[in-house]
Image 1 (cartoon, rainbow, N blue to C red):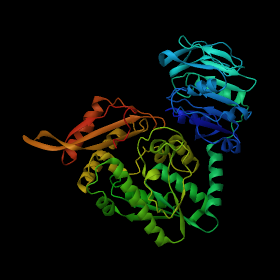
Image 2 (spheres, rainbow, N blue to C red):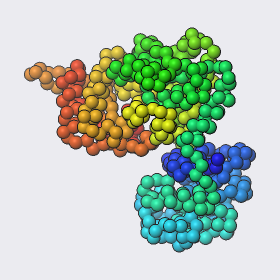
Image 3 (cartoon, rainbow, N blue to C red):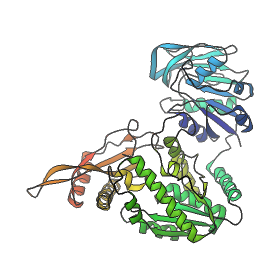
Image 4 (tube, one colour):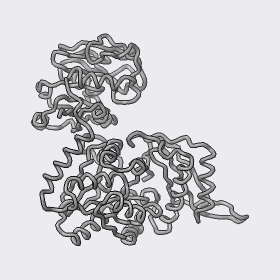
Length: 511
């Protein structure tokens, strides 16, 4: 199987490069720019892509790469900062731009025989840079320009080194996928030999080898797609030696625990144990307000419940988790110098004394890839297409302290909102639709009496992979139905507001 290495220099788009490469049928993985050359050589990569990044090659502590990567004899594509770094290290010149180029630009190809084969004149590209290449290194030729950038693309076909100043991985670059395709297939000579089916086969073999012929695996089901796909993948590898634990942490949607327990057993034939630990979780959350603290508390509580259940089950040395790539990217800079956005209990909430060995087969997959895997594993599309639900549950949709009363209020409001979204026929169009309970009260009037009650936020967003999101422009009629029903049917709520913030700058969840 061919492999592409994406070296991360801190760009917000790094994960999109890996995702686009996989969409083209080639396996890719992201590693930090500081990855030792010996590890890169040992990994037997067939091509390397140098990502963009926010810094200048001349800046103090600017991220760089071992100069030896250019002696490996494999194709290299530099993107934005990657082009500038390649220029700098190979003997060209990089200078600050007279003005920062950010946004759309028209590409003017000078040579369409290599990387830009099939790319039209004045094709739209997306720029985001402060520095620019002023002089190409020896052996390179300029192959594209824009009105503001005389070196928008450069090529050294003899050594198979290429660079683009724009971002081919983002949707704003109209023919970006074609450019990446040219690099992978026309230049690097790779084959589209990666697919979800082949990934499943490889992971099943890895899990069998890791677990061995006798040991058991315990898997925590959250009620979402990620944990169920993880469970079915592990089940395929070890059969009935997988024991799933579905915990009612008191933070699930209304009636969700009973409904899913029946589905797990009857539809998917999983060996599942149901545990009512709602009182335990809510007691642990008493007085906890900071969202990061909530996540840590819930993550630790999950592990303690799992450990207790594992002792009952016996022989469970492994814990399978549904950690996916966005969890990792947003939790910690494990793949590069990107900033931590928030921790996830799957990633950052495990106590130091964890007695399990972790199995995280989805760790390098995006959400849409996980859903595709779920279809391959036989999960019905209705379940697959359900909206993502956070691992900490409603705790991160209750701003402030989590109490049993506030949970019930949010469960009722959320049920109304989802019912109206489904009735409007837009559920599948949305990435997520949910309610948030605020820690404030507002003055209102009901039945000629003054009220001082809670405020609920309606959040409806569209997205492809959860890394960015747009708020959904819901009709005034739909918003009116949601608001009217919540105020009339949910006790203690007298005001509903609508969240119209994109990601970034906000996150999809409120905490």
